Image (cartoon, rainbow, N blue to C red; front, side, top):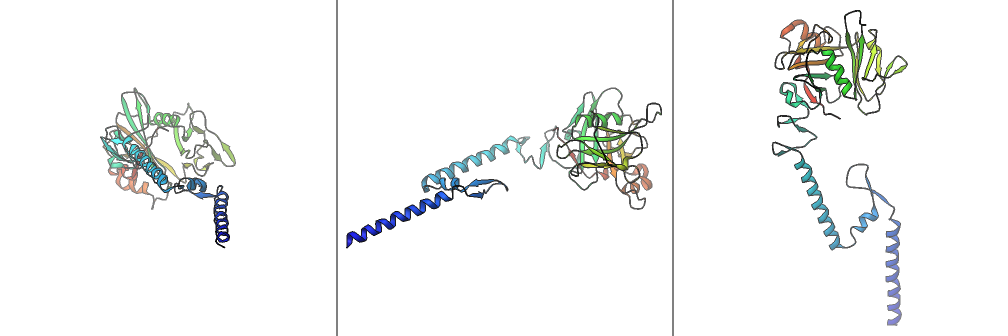
Length: 311
């Protein structure tokens, strides 16, 4: 009788092991979300393999933890500013080795914060673009180096040509008029899928300098082809107002001259601010320019400035 009972127990134990093994095999191809970033997946068999024995699992976990700590530490120590670690997602180390937030209040912004320089020469200027489109960063800043005589139109065209994500709509008055060019629109290719605009039902592409050229004051009719891109244009319904100063620390005044006539000086600023509200009673632009005149510091319109990096 004992022999029979023992034989039955052996069979039950063997069946239990067999069922347990089949269950593990059926899960080999199960897909579970990993504990990492959303959208990443791992196989449940990988998780099972790591836990085959408590002792080896502990060693693997410990080793993995040490690697992550080391990797994290290495990532932090790679970003140092004056010997202090920082998070590159929120801050950067400027040319003077000073830690700055990536979005800098305009009154704290300096030439040392520029990270995208275009041109060569002993003189330097800053160009700022603010779309007022509700997107971030709200205003992009570029640096421009030059020698000899340069105008505001040279700076914006040279920067647009250098940054392959930036594009502009330019009005060409013709060589015989003497009026030069006017900036009708400025855009930025957010997702790197090409520079295109719409004019009515026609799709337009820029020239080799990233410029769309028009001979009419039709700026309001040019619209963005890609809804994700940044784009503002206008002449009647909106307007790229032009704010300048010959010395970085002085008031940024509204320019009564177009960019083709505005001669750059060393340490000057050209700041472009899109006015989407052309109603005299509610426009921020009119509120600053009309009652205050030269006492209006256009710098205060720009809020935070983002010194863009070279792609």
